[in-house]
Length: 191
Ligand code: ADP
Image (cartoon, rainbow, N blue to C red; front, side):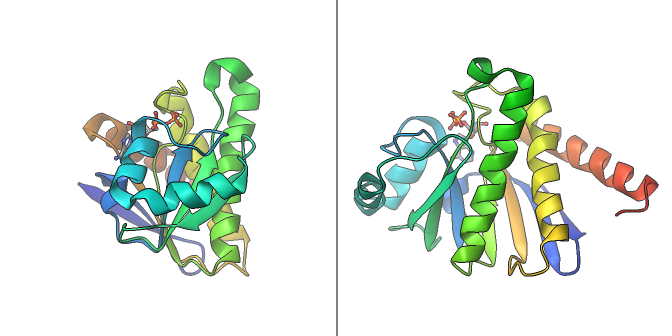
């Protein structure tokens, strides 16, 4: 299952159902915690698949604030880099602040990717597992942030952003949210 859409002048946004550790994009994004020392969920899967080199680099970084992102090697992954983004714990922040921090985690990941010349990257659905962010609320924030970035940063070299949704339900929530955003953009003539 998948869907792709042209955004801005030269970028493509893709939605796929799958496992982020298997992606062939230049970078994959990890939904990390502030320690950057590993955890469960997608974080555990990335460290297992990528091997100990990733954690060794993470240890040297000294953590990462919520809403920010750091980059390491991809170790044994197909991806050259892992970008470790820290999303908000939903119930600790409240909806408004959580949305700001979630958007920031995506935007900072894209900025870090651009700083390293990354042209393609894959995101998981940050914060929607252990961090408790409702998928229906997180999807439009995630998609809008990426679409805004791709259409408003002329100096960006990013050509492809793929959301890798774990399971059919998550995929469907993102697909519905993307269709809604694209419809709204068309109506206001900004698509
Ligand atoms: P967080 O702590 O940010 O909530 P989690 O890893 O608990 O991070 O969950 C984030 C999202 O990643 C969830 O929606 C979960 O279903 C999804 N996920 C878990 N494993 C994978 C994987 N291998 N590939 C892609 N997404 C995954």
